Length: 275
Image (cartoon, rainbow, N blue to C red; front, top):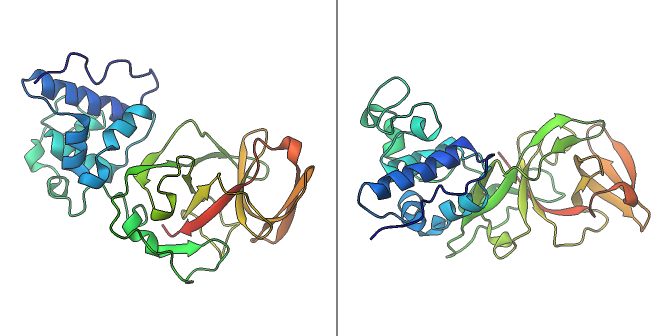
C-alpha cells in the first residue's frame, strides 16, 4: 500500500521542529516501501487511547512535543529522540554519533508510553485539587473504563505584565491526556500556573484545567484576559455588565476591571492539578 501525498506536505513555516521531523520521518518510512499511517504510529506509541495523537499534531503543528512523548514516538518510528529534536540529521544516531540502540534505554522501554509526567493523564487526575479548595481536599475521580485521547492543549506563560503574564493562545506547548470531566468539550484547555499569587490554593508550576463553556459565578476561580493580552488566574468576587472584581490570595488584594477592557468573559477553572 502506498500514499501519494507526503504527510509533511503543506506544514506551515512556523511548524515546530519536532513536529516537522515526525512527519518527515513518517514520509521516509513510507518511501522505503511500507505504509505506516498516523494512527498506526500513534497506537504503537501510546496505545488505543492515543490513536489520534499524530492527527492532532498535524492540526496543531506549532505544538512543542514533550520529551517523554518523543521517546515512544521515536521507538515506534525506529529513530533517535535526537533526530526528532533536530540535533542530528541521521535518524539512526544521536548527536554524539551513538547508534539508537545505545541511547537512553528508557526511550526503547518506556514503562508508560506517552505520559509526560504524573499530572498529565486522566488516570492521575486523582491528584487534582478541587477548584477553590486548599491542597489535600477530596480528589476528582479519574475516568473509569474510558479511553481518553491525548488532545488537551496546554498553554504556558511568556513575559510578565503589570498584573499578570502574557500568553500566546496560538502556540500549544504540548497535548495532555484529556480528563474525564473534559471528554467531549472541545473548548477546554490547561494552563501552567506562574508565580505564587494563588498559594495556598495552587503553587507555581501547578496546572489549571479551564472550561470556557461554563459561566463563572462569584466565588469561582477564573482566568481573566485583558485587552492587551495579559492573563490572570484569580477568584471572582463580583461581576456586572460593566465591571468585574477578582481576589488575589498572596498577597491579599482585590483587582477591578472594566468588562469592556477584557478580551472575553472570565473562564471557569474546573480544577487545579498538582505538578
